[in-house]
Structure formats: C-alpha cells, structure tokens
Length: 81
Image 1 (cartoon, one colour):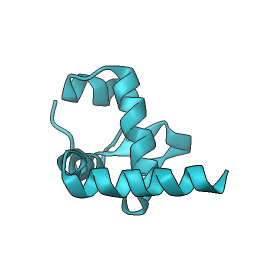
Image 2 (cartoon, helix red, strand yellow):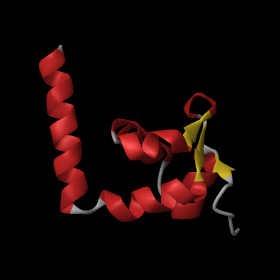
Image 3 (cartoon, helix red, strand yellow):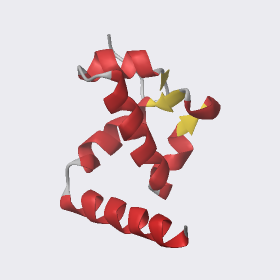
Image 4 (cartoon, helix red, strand yellow):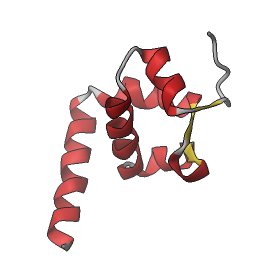
C-alpha cells in the first residue's frame, strides 16, 4: 500500500510497511521523541506518526550523526536524574 506524505500511520501499519516487529516500532518512536525535529510528527498521544517524517527518520536513523545525537540526549537525561 502506498501512503501520502501527510498520512498518519498506526503502529501496525508501520510494522507491516517496513517489515519490522511492533517492539521495534515502539523503540524507534521513543527515539523519534528524543530528537526535537521529529517530535511534531508524533500525534494522538503517540498512537500515530506522520509518514513523511517517519521516512526521514528511518533514513537518518542509521547514520553516525543520529547515533551521536541520541547518545548525547540519553546521557543528558541520565545526568538529570
């Protein structure tokens, strides 16, 4: 099934589209929440994610810049506790 850039997808739809498990989708959604430029894509209390930003995030996710940014944010969160 093809999605338009402004479509909001559920966890099930994301798992089927990318061929990944639901726990992986939840982990990626939590990673998206940490990065400020992807936060607006998560709507309805985290139940739906905009397809356009989801595509951008999955392209960005495997890069060293993303890993460094996530590690930096997670380290800041740990130090605040």
